[in-house]
Length: 154
Ligand SMILES: [Zn+2]
Image (cartoon, rainbow, N blue to C red; front, side, top):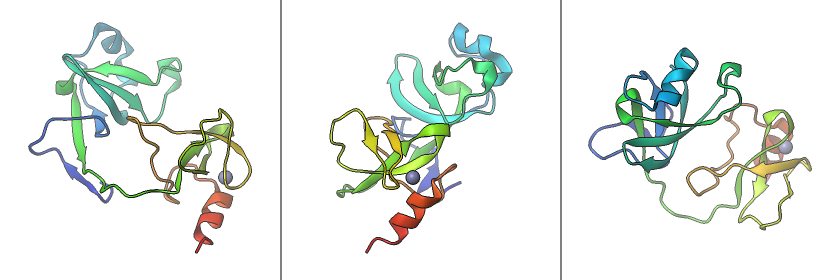
């Protein structure tokens, strides 16, 4: 478990919490039909829905046909409550570029569609539950040049 995360204890699941798919007994028929390709997948809750949650997966196996977002029943999930991060202005967030490489992008977003990351590659902001997560050198596929540039900042 990564720092800043605690196991689900008392509060209801909400947007931003991390989930692992452990069952497909209660979810929508369309999700159940994806079967074993969904089991064991991890992701983040985008929002609550009437009887479950909309989840965006961290990875999308070929068997899921390019579908990253799934409606899943809470009873089919292990939920890791993500602690609220105290508000402070952030200057950097995560953008996704070619080959799903994670780059540093400047915040707040300018609103223009094409964002240029710190290393000069084009990247699209990662928006999860209405915010752009902070860039970290520990991210999967973090751009080495962006990591170097961020570390060199005062
Ligand atoms: Zn980069």
